[in-house]
Amino acid sequence: MSWLVPSLPTWGRSTPASSSTSLIPDEEDIDAPPPFPLLNSHQRSSAPTPSSTPSFSIAPPSPPKANGNDEEEPSDLNIAIVDAPLGDMLPPVSTTRKPNFGIQKGGLDPASNGLNGAEKKPDPVKKKKGKVALTPGHSALDWARLTSSGQDLRGVHGFQRVTLAELKEHNTPDDAWSVFNGMVYNITPYLPYHPGGEDEMMRVAGRDGTKLFMLTHSWVNLDFMLKECMVGVLVRG
Ligand code: HEM
Image 1 (spheres, rainbow, N blue to C red):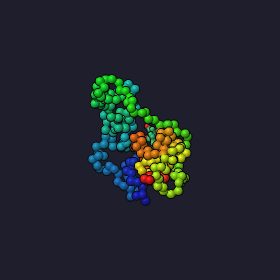
Image 2: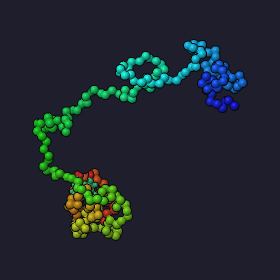
Image 3: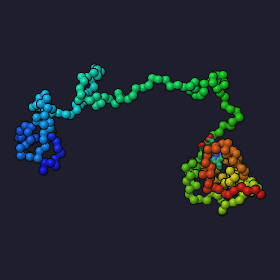
Image 4: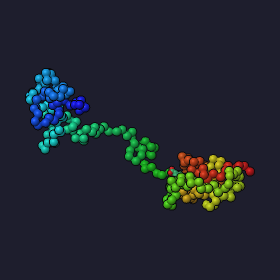
């Protein structure tokens, strides 16, 4: 049943100490695979010492030389990839300077921004905007949790048709309605969650806040954020 054994060449098998060192397969084992290289092959005849056991293993990497001289006798078995330290395989650092198109660190080239080298002053018309420190438990994630909790955030039953006069009455922090894009929202629940602060939000309480909202942060998805706070639609009357 020796055909079940992985077909290693006979010279690769460990032979019992008592058996002969001959390369000729055991006469009793008629199923033994042929030796490789074949006994009469050119490869075998050109081997330097026929008596020695052939070895095809890759030579282990040689230790780094203390004198720093890395030069070594070239050898087809001593593969350079095994030997090379990882750092040597990294691509070389580019010495090419990247173009900066006249832009200096910290902004545009003063010569090209019309300031004739003068320091750029902040625009006095634009008010500095800023986020406020929200009280614990009032992050954007907390708001998302609240709106998906099923809790009533509208404060009204059903979809309302709200007149302007009605809207104006809802202008206190405890009862604040505002209009965005024609829809009326109860903004009271959102006040402590607003990154811009409650005071900014209260500027639009009881009135249409669309313009201020869009001027401040048109990128904010209000429809999605306040969909659970929708009271109804603004109507004439
Ligand atoms: C109910 C409607 C509103 C919602 C849902 C809302 C939502 C938000 C959100 C999500 C941010 C953070 C934006 C970001 O980090 O990019 C923010 C910031 C801010 N909001 Fe509002 N906002 C509303 C109305 C308003 C109004 C009416 C004002 C009034 C001016 C205002 C003023 C601000 C300010 C000043 C900031 C800070 C902007 C910054 O960080 O530079 N928001 N708001």
